[in-house]
Structures are given as C-alpha cells and as structure tokens.
Length: 143
Image 1 (cartoon, rainbow, N blue to C red):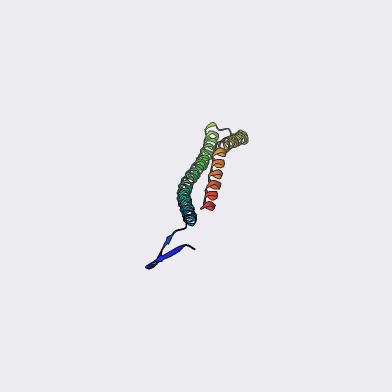
Image 2: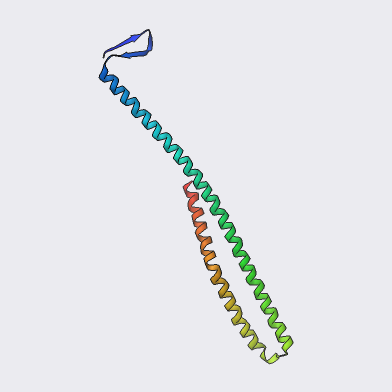
C-alpha cells in the first residue's frame, strides 16, 4: 500500500490514484444510497399522513351515512304510524265497520309499497355505508 501516516493516526494521505478514485466512487455510492433512503423515508411519511387523512375522511363519511340511515328509518316509522292513525280515523269518520278489513288490507298494501320505496331509496345509501366501512377498515390495516 502506498500510504504514509502524518502525525495523527486518523489522517491518511493516499498516493495511489486508482485507489483514491475507487474510494471516491464508493463514497459517492454511499451518499446516493443515503439520499435514496432519505427520499423513501420522506415518501413513506407522506403516505402515512395521506392514509391517516383518508381514514379520517372515510370515518366521517361512515358516521354521516349511518346518521342518514337512522333518519330514514325514523321517517319510515313515523309514516307507518301516521298511516295507521289515518286508517283508524278514516274508519271512524266513515262509519264503515263492515269494510274495516278491506281498509286494513289496502293500507297494508300501501304500507308495503312505502316500505319497499324507502328500502329502495336507502339501498344505495346502505351500499355506500358498507363501502366506506370496508375502505376505512382497509385503510386501518395499512397503517
């Protein structure tokens, strides 16, 4: 080896040009790898932040959709009670005791139609709620 130590054991002067060039390339490769690792860490931190924001947004959407479903169910209950009340009131006002069974049957059909209509309206909402829940659960697994 063509090296000479100068007063301090930590300082080495390299006279071999080929060795110096190889050492320079090795240091440059190490610096490049450090820069790549730093970029990857920064990218992963940004990804983690994005995933947390996405999870928070999905959770808010799930809560909003859940509240909307609860409101629709409450509305269905109220409309059902109102129809039943109106059926009884119609029966009383009209005095049609013999036709009460027919009125109940007609109202039952109407109630089933209202129920089907509300279920049909709430189906996309329920599907969206399920999708948001699965997205939120999927995001939790990534973090």
